[in-house]
Length: 406
Image 1: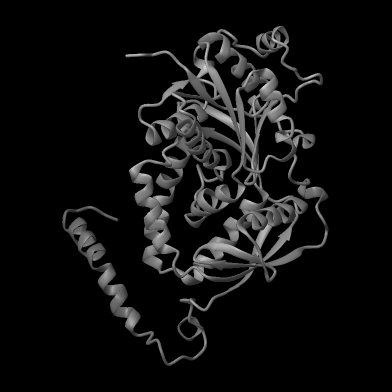
Image 2: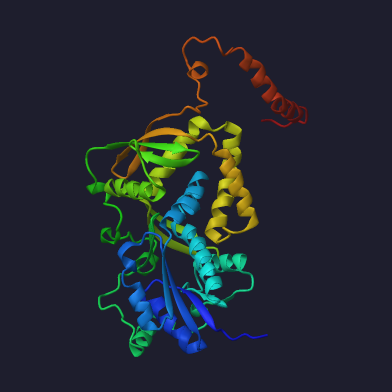
């Protein structure tokens, strides 16, 4: 069996780590390296990528605009499920990794590459997310994870390697944390945030103003849904990407979507992350409000019971697993009637529901009213209650006969 690595497709961001990895792969394996960067909304960070990758030794560079795919095929499905990890994290990084891995594998197959590589460390979740996706999509692919192999185990050693090989290194003091950004969120980890008692500095935040500095006047918006997905804001029909950009702008202006979380990583340790998810936070509130009048009670409760598992599968990297596909199909069935309009108030870090309406509404004023009605016989509730109490009565009678007291 030939174990030689001939051609590698590297998930490349243009930062110090992946620039060093690119050169290290060439030196260590004597292989051709193709750099791939996914544009999923990180903005100006992508501007120098192609030039830098080619200068560092890449034989070819792919920079693919995957923004629409990211929102339509990854973010929207998760928000149809109201996915959230450990009650706080809206999965911004977790949702991006399977998309990046999928395109990376597609490029590897197109280019005849035998290997893929990434810049995730051996301590984090991303190594698992990338590699589970690689192997689910291309079972025979070889994987190189430099952070699990090399001796460059500090920022200083990375910078020394970069200088030695003529790779540009940062000339300004690095911010004391690492970040990951896309259309859904930006995350901050490491550095000063490793002390869970220490509050993050206000200067760190990128997408949102402090709620204290947000406008003193609330802003009211209307968001229309169709089959569980947002389709318009204030009557303006927009594409998935434009919907998200508008929600991010609105949420950021009002300081919405900040979360400071100590979460449980898949590899076993606890980690502190600070997140900004302005648009996603608004979308989640609106979607839950829309479901409240359009989704059957038992369907909702069954779906809700599966949300922790669904979210955990995304967080742990099982997007392409059969059990996740099963859950997604179930979720999508629940969304057929989730259509209508929600009215929301944005104000100083909060998003509050003011109203909701739908042609598919299951809410009936005739049944719910406290006024006189002719459609509900209140006396029927007596039998309903006594039947539900039957097992409780039998249990207590047995306890009484045995000498136990309630």
